[in-house]
Image (cartoon, rainbow, N blue to C red; front, side, top):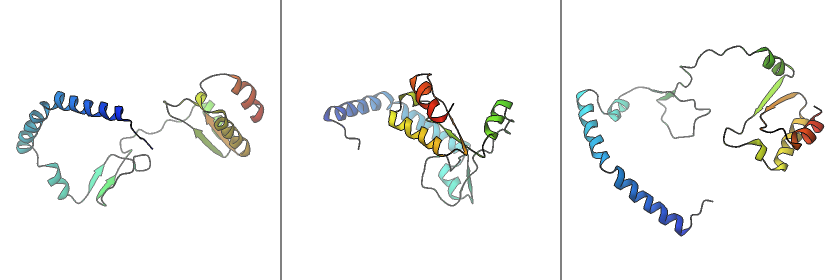
Length: 156
């Protein structure tokens, strides 16, 4: 639960007032130019979408954020994706060793070095319990965990 203190709430109100004062004069100018632009060149977006049979959006529903949508909205994510390149020999050998492969990724913000030891150990135990699966993960540092624990448990 994200509970803010009274000081956090005061700072939020102050920041909100500053943003409205800073950018409040820009909004009427943008709105005015939008009206001129749309009246000369295009219909309102709402009018176009309400009269359309289908609306195609460049979105991939399996990796996008969940959001309410209509049945006439059709995701066509990846339509501009390039053809995949063949893997180099090193990765072809690694991925063909076992019949299943799992990539463990925590993104660019979370470092696996900073994971608590019980979490690291549970990943190692999971990898050990699934010998038919190749696990691929990035570990940012060559430390005691990789030298002693992981290499001994997994047999590297």
